Amino acid sequence: MEYQLQRMDVGLIILDAGRRILSLNGTAARLLGGDAGALVGAHILDLHAPASRPKVELLLNAAGEPEAPPSATSMVVALPGRVTVVRATSLPWNGATATALMLFDPGGPAATTVQPTAPEPDAAEPLVKLPVATRQGVALIDPAEAVYLRADGHYARVHTAGGDFLCTLSLSDLESRLDGRHFVRAHRGYIVNLRFAQAIERVGDRAAFVMAAPGAPRVPVSRGRIDALKKRLAL
Image (tube, rainbow, N blue to C red):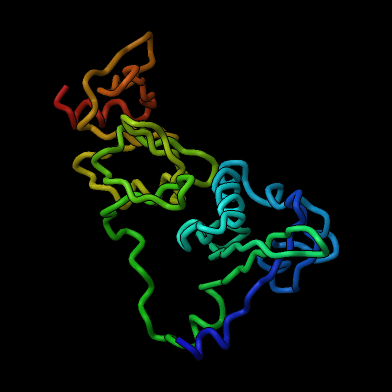
């Protein structure tokens, strides 16, 4: 582990009170996919996809709270072409308060040097819990509580009876790792938990699942999937 840390590139970004970049090192610029000079002055949220900005906002808010647990001040975020671990902390800066972001690239040279023969993780490994962003950090939800899941940019939105949450996995990842006996892709942008499906509603040539949840939400069914779903449900 010590050798791996010695080999790992660490990006460092300093943000002002308005969350604009004051300074950054070359590794951070590379991980962000831009030129260091051009990135200075940019708002940090503008460098992330709209769907991931609430998650980054939670991280930055937690960095300014002295009692925030480590789980709230670190998270995995998607950057151009890679997934990066980010740790945030506040610090005094020229008489004001700034935020320091440390970016660790777990997929960089260190990982391949230390364990060149280690097998790649199985992307289709079943999910025991769904990781979602909350104000306190990352929460783990039982997949059985998900009524349906909706694509949200590169990520997914998990809808439960108690509310909806941002999940850092894509809808395609979730489709391959959730239990196929209960979760089906009803639409390009939706996965439905059949345990909550209480009816199929038809309006003209369109169909939707009516879900057993507050407000009886409708989940659209695409035309190309309706026949397979009807066969699956013996309709």
